[in-house]
Amino acid sequence: MTPSVHKVLVLCTGNSCRSQMAEALLNHDLAGLVHASSAGIRPQPRVADGAIEALRLAGLPTEGLHPKDLDTLLDQPFDLVVTVCDNAREACPVFPRPVRSIHLPFHDPHGEELASFLRVRDDIRARLVPAVREALGLGARS
Image (cartoon, rainbow, N blue to C red; front, top):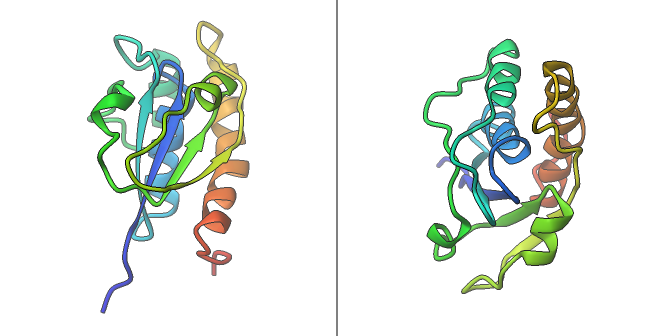
């Protein structure tokens, strides 16, 4: 019997940089354990070019990434909600059913050079992936 896959929602304000990179990293690094989605409180029209390029340079898929409005995901049964900016933490709605949440803020690279996106991508991988693993009781990587 295969273990259940945990559903994780990553929230930020615009859903164009940090949360998109977090979604891709979680789905790659915790494949088979986690299915991550991302959304924004006030989603931007598109994912930032720097976020797409930072993911591409790490060999991660970017197809299908697009900003999503939190309201469209509220009724989904998430196991964990992660806020990656203070705005999202303050505006985080009450979900229809109880859901565990953690807050782990990251610098917003929107409008900055690619190097900033790369630093944020690496920071997300270094801090968020282990934090989600721990919050869901998945243990250390073997």
